[in-house]
Structures are given as structure tokens and as C-alpha cells.
Image (cartoon, rainbow, N blue to C red; front, side, top):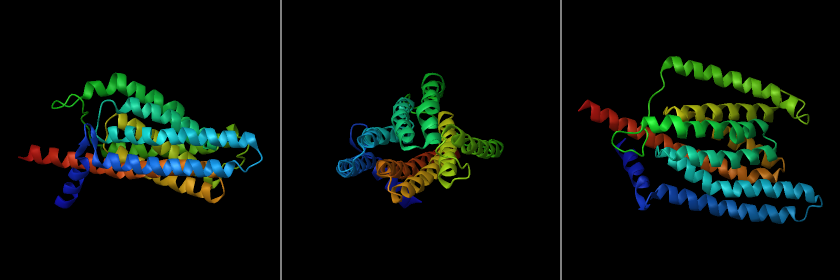
Amino acid sequence: MENKITIIEVLRKDIFKGINLFEAILFLFTSIIGFILFILTITIWSNETDSSINLTNIISNFLVLFDIPLGILAATFLSKKSRLAPLLLCLDAIFYGSANFIAGQLALGFVNAILTPLIYIYAYLFVWPKRLSEEKNTEVNTKKLNWTSGMLLVLGILLVSISFAFLIPIINTSESDSGSFLVWFDSFAASLMLFAVIMGTMRYREMWYLYFISNTLKIILFSVLVSQGELDSILLLTLATSYWINTIFGMAIWKDSEIQTFNKNKK
């Protein structure tokens, strides 16, 4: 445990004002990879004959390319429990959701581009300002989920996932099979994302577990799409991977914070 905490402390050490080592590494690495992949996909699409498809793909990838640094910045602000996190996450969700819509992931698009911004705006204006840490007025106190709330959470995730899975084929006629592998993956990932956002605004630490599962599913989903030749999902895969990495770091920070608080109260 001591080695783990030491590693976290090293990664959390600021190399610039407000920017720690982990954020700088993740920001630079994913931004460079994203830019390279963007150029490669544009080069491939330049040889395609359907200019309308090219334009749609280019717009989708440009949104994701812009969202990679923005998303990392927003996610790291959340991992640091900053009160500004909801605003950045709101912008991130709009860009990311728009790209999901264009790529055909309707459930993820609806949750990210429409529901998530509304929840984050509400959190920024009414929820987080009332729950600021007594020690630091820029850091929000967190809390732990109980068993009753946990069971309700699982039930809610399942019900929303099933609802999305049956509604998507009705809205999108090209997806005629409600039992489609990709439809269920899209629906379950979107449901997890929605409840993770809600839990985040309510300051529950367990939101990171939902983010972890959701991002894992998105990595699988976008990997399948890329393997099927849908190059417009490459940058979405890159972004989902960066979120997955940041989720692990966020879990470690919030867990470490819980340990320190426990030890402090124990003394």
C-alpha cells in the first residue's frame, strides 16, 4: 500500500501550476496519438469517392480530436475533485456526444450530448458549491454509497439499458434488431455513463467503478467497429482509452483520499 501511495503522490506532483505529472503525460501522449490518427484517417478518406461520407467522417473525427485534450483536462479536474469539473465535463460531453451521434452510437450520443450537460450544469450551479471542503474552498467533499443505494443503482442501470436497447431500433431504422450486439453494448455503456455522471454530481466515490466499466465497454465497442472497417471510430477508441487510464488514476486518488481521511479520524 505504501508503494502505491508513493507512486500516486509522484504522479500528483505539480510540474506546472495546476498541472501534475500524470496529467501532462496523458495529455501529451493522447493528443499526439490522436493527431497522428486524424491525419492518417484523412489521408485514407481522401481516396474515397463518396465526398458526403468523407465530410461526415472528417467532422466526427475533428470533434473527437478537439475533445481529446478537453476531455483529459475535464477528467483530471474531476479526479482532483475541483468545483470547476462540471463545467469542463459539460463541454466535453457535448463534443463527445456529437461525435457519438455521427458515428451511429445513439444511446451514447443522447446521454453525452443532451442529458449529461444538463446534469453537470445543475451540479455546478446548485450541488457542488454547497459541498465544498472546509479546508479547501475549491475541492469538493466526497461520500460512500450504501448497500440500499447500491441495489437501486444496479436496478436503475439495468432498466435504462434495456430501455435504450429497445428504443434505439425504433428511432434508428437501420438498426432493425433490438438484440444486436452493438446495440446492447451501446445501451449498457450509455446507461453506465449516465449513472456515473449522476453519482459524480452527488459526490459518490463509486462513480469511478461505473466509469471504469463504461470505458472498458466503449473500448470493446469501438475496437469491434474499427475491426469492421469503420475508421471514424479510431479516435473514439483513442479517447475512450485515455478516459480508461484516467479512470484508474481517479479511483486511486479518491481511494487514497478516503484512506487519509480514515487515518486522520482514527488518530
